Length: 111
Length: 113
Image (cartoon, rainbow over all chains, first blue to last red; front, side, top):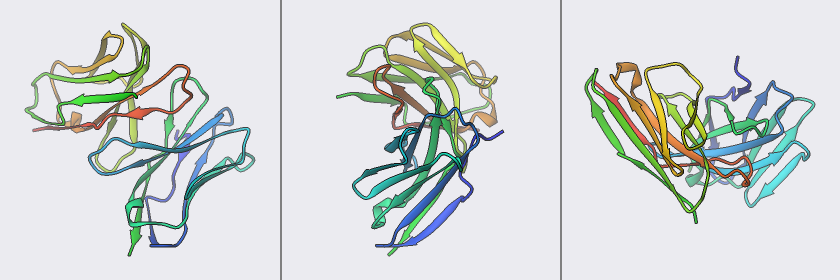
């Protein structure tokens, strides 16, 4: 049973436009959500997170939105740049040492 | 600042051979440590985590084992590798007081032939 789902295996976006990556979850006990970026043959790097008491968190070009009633979060990247091409993982936790991971979405930024 | 090291970076091993992957963290004390595996085209699978020396929790029963002989050292082992053990192995750490973010090492690419 996948508690965290990223239903789009890949996404292609024109450079300069907005990239929107989506993530759904089923466990209402999750209280913290994170986004990671991963290049091939490297470890994931932490991007941005959000607590369940908030509905938006912004850091530069990256904004994460949380809709608790829909059990949905999204990562917005604007404007998209070629270096943003990577696999993006959504993760969630009940703040109990463990992260539950989505399967990832491969983002391709077209020049 | 904190850094995390993994070695080797790549490894090619025959089926049935033993395995030892090492992970060390610098610049922090008493971290939580994690071993993940990413199979080709797949997400991250948590294999083991440790909240202290000698304390190992296994998430998935399999051919692998983990040990934590020192506070900042985490080792992933196998006595006999299987073809299905091939993958990209990642070590991560998080601080007890540092929130929920996990920070990853560079990974080890293991190919079992």
